[in-house]
Length: 321
Image (cartoon, rainbow, N blue to C red; front, top):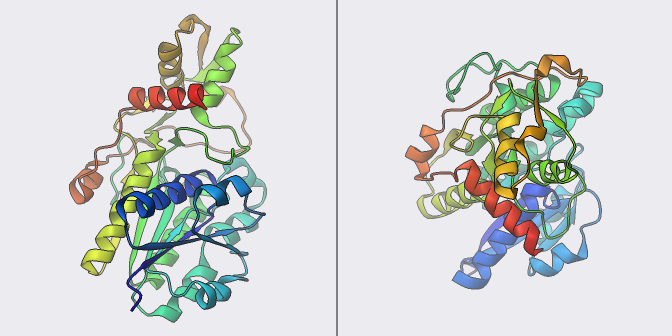
């Protein structure tokens, strides 16, 4: 009898997806965890990633139409845990194409496919802190979701769709995720690496002093997902969970940059504070979507990495890569 638990990562070639696959694969190699691993991709998965996370099966899936999902059930079997990291997550892009944002970010084809398996699968879905309005500090999970842009609205729609149609789910409202580059480098700029690269030039750079988030270290997000997966596999108890997943620090963009400057020894006088309202980014951005993460600590016993420590770990990894 096959006792291996099957983990499926949707959007496995993205930033979080790659970090997650590597970690699950390490669990399989080092701790003899009985997992089987599969992931979906839309564009061709890079060989470097496939080499790092073998054994795993890669499936080409169009998550908008659901095309390719059925072949997962036939080849890989019914998953025990599905982690949905796939999204259109650039707010400006969502703003220009709301139809695509809704079609990609609301996982209707996945949820429909899941309904074939009864209530034996856990869906872990990545949402965002941008579901909050941004009018106060330290939002709690039960605060009203009142997004100010299309990206946030598409993520609220996804949360509502999942909670209405899935018997077991964990929705993770993640803040800005930062950390080391992935095995197969992703093209979009990573927050710490980008700040480092602009400060390295030694010219003045403007940063918002009045927009606040709780940036979260990527390995902490991976820990949350791993802990939830193990909990589900061992307890098999019904799970309907909504969690804020942020770091322990409420920071402005300016403070985020100051930490990088401190760690690298750059001249902090190069950092120029500006107001977010002085720049037109083609999208409304909430002013303060810092989150209360006490439920995360209470429910899973996870204490996320302080930002300054995370920055050090990120820049150390960059120096050694």
